[in-house]
Length: 119
Image 1 (cartoon, rainbow, N blue to C red):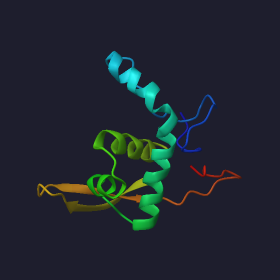
Image 2 (image 1 turned 90 degrees about the vertical axis):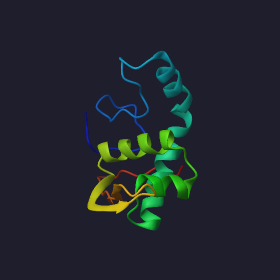
Image 3 (image 1 turned 135 degrees about the vertical axis):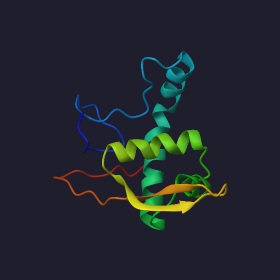
Image 4 (image 1 turned 120 degrees about the vertical axis):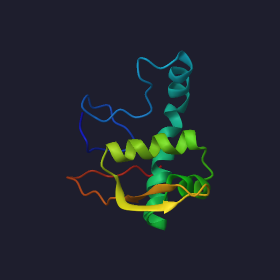
């Protein structure tokens, strides 16, 4: 699979797969993947824009800022990492529980004629 590409999804065969349950996941995961298909691109864009606007953030900070549930934000951030749009900053910050969490940053991706979606 390609590591680059349009992070809102693509019909290209080698494009990263977003919002899809693995074969070994229960049927409820597959149903959720179908239901989220329409909004996962929007959420992915929100996470990316949040990191652009606010700089480095932990998952909990992104969730709090966007009002997203962890089970919605984290998969979108993972998809952005997999596609190369978000990277580990190499820094950590304490969470509310006192544990250290990765600080994620948006990577400004330049590509040949590719545009990010508006939504």
